[in-house]
Image: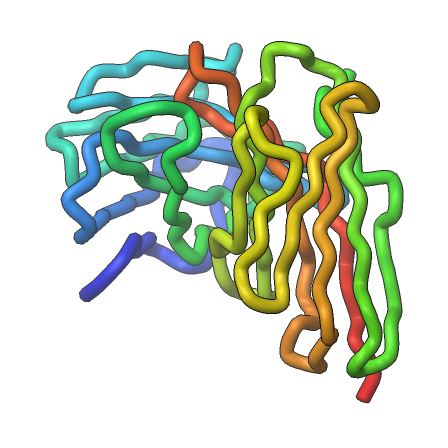
Length: 114
Length: 112
């Protein structure tokens, strides 16, 4: 595998379910990100991890719980979601350094909450 | 309040002509700007970037222009090709944060 991979690509879940999204990067990067893209809205940053440490939480509800066990893997644990949480969830990674470092995105997980 | 705005949700141009995509921002702290391209069912892919110390950056058919006083940037694609048809996102960053702030995107359709 190369680049940034995300699994699953599609997920349908009920409001009482617990599920997890997985992201893996094979680029040797040290920063990883979760973004959310709702229909007709800009990509919204959710979380930033730098060297496995969370450095930013963009006021995300606690029903979204990120986990970064190492610099190559990032998870987003989901529980008691709402239908309005249905969106495309994108993971990205970048090399250490300044804000201008290019972020590489995975293909996303299309989440539907029933 | 959106800090990065792409006011044109869609743009259609003929093959071979110039495509101009526009982006406005409000945050004076932004000092690095990027354009991403997104095809359906794929994540955004990096296209071109520009630092606030420059006003132009060119890479092949793609040129980004930055007007700091107007807080405006644009992406020019010349000549446009059908394969350029995609959604284009403008993004901005400041050196205090690692994260990007995105616009809502412009869907470009290049007609053969």
